[in-house]
Length: 60
Image (cartoon, rainbow, N blue to C red; front, side):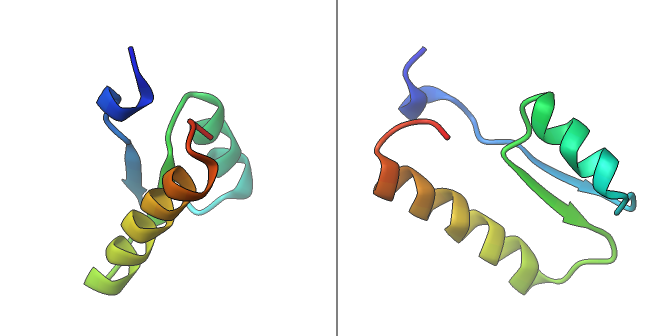
């Protein structure tokens, strides 16, 4: 599957433990936002994912 076709996954959870964040990344999550969150946090994460794709031109 081409990276352009792959759905990005942002985990939204109440678990802010660094070990959980690392585990989520190992399992394939592209982003991680902890609850409680606001709209700006989600938008920031979406922009980060979009920027990485544009800068690298490949999956990260």
